Length: 133
Image (cartoon, rainbow, N blue to C red):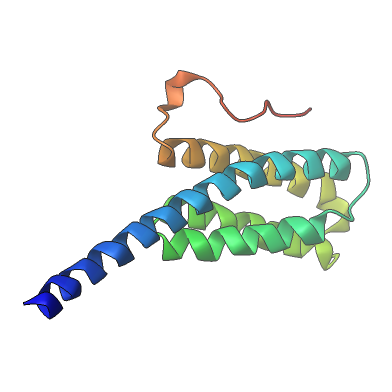
């Protein structure tokens, strides 16, 4: 009987650990949104060095969002990752400012999705740092 009780506790422990990891992911994503905003402001000023970091962070959000069951967050991460990669590779220098603008728009969509994942309704007002620019 002791073994069966222990066997039932294992799925509960796993579920609790998954929930803890998902909460940590959402907290990191909230922080990453603010970092994206700061780095995009630098990119608007002509400093494109943060784009590699944006690409890396977005890749992490893309994958972790999918793992933890946040498909909209994952999709936004993927879109940010691809646009940042395009700029890092230098494939669109004439449209650079337009792509940076698209990155900013998707970042704001990501911010909304992260807030909703936190249980904050869209009309509750921003709890993330205000957008720069």
